[in-house]
Length: 182
Length: 177
Image: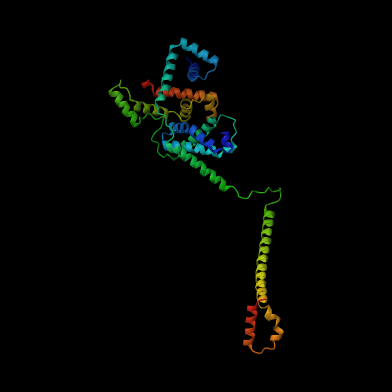
């Protein structure tokens, strides 16, 4: 990144290649839309490029990168909530979504039926989506990006104790959602 | 059990669970890790809890990883180049001069236009001078062409008819200077 700050555009290409999969994956876990994920990831890189001359290596580059990504994701979600007039899905709602209803029916008919890989993936995704926005963000950063509590705190603007509490609640909620499949 | 003690128990259970999750994440200090491991040895319920939390967490591994499409890199770099071009075009072509506090750029503008006006007027003068010189040159050429005739002008005053004068002029031009 220091080379990019110095005007080396080849170094920026290297950065894009090194982090693009992680960024797209990060946004996809949060948004479930590849187009949106790539648009947001591209936005992150553009913001970094525009700010390159002001870059100061006070923290790890990945922390800075994901802080920008976190802010963009939050803004995007906020924009979607404002535009949504009718909510078709409320995480706290007990009403089952169609795919869960189907799975429940199948399980009722064959309680010991094992789910195939796609079905399991769907169940797990839904359990992740049922988390609160901040819990989900912390889980994605910790599980899929391998970030420490301290890194997560720096990215989300929280203290380490707050991150510890957030992840504890998230993991308990995941355990409850996936109880019958454990 | 009183309400307070129920609440305290719940808080303690929450704290234990929070520490357990942090332990599973490898985020506890050495002393806290020792403490939790000691409790896990003694408490089957806590071990069961740790196992369920761990298995639920590992189920997240079943989610497929998504990577950037083949076009992503090219698209991103193209946007970066467009940003770079926009930034270059928006920069002023003439470097801004530093202004002394209290003065504006109007003095600079005034000087610029004064110099421009002077140069234009000098150019105009140069052009008209060259035109004049060209006219003078043409006149000189004509004079030189007809020098013989002009030398004889006093004598030609005695010639009365125009045709004779015309013939004398033509002869003079042929003869040259």
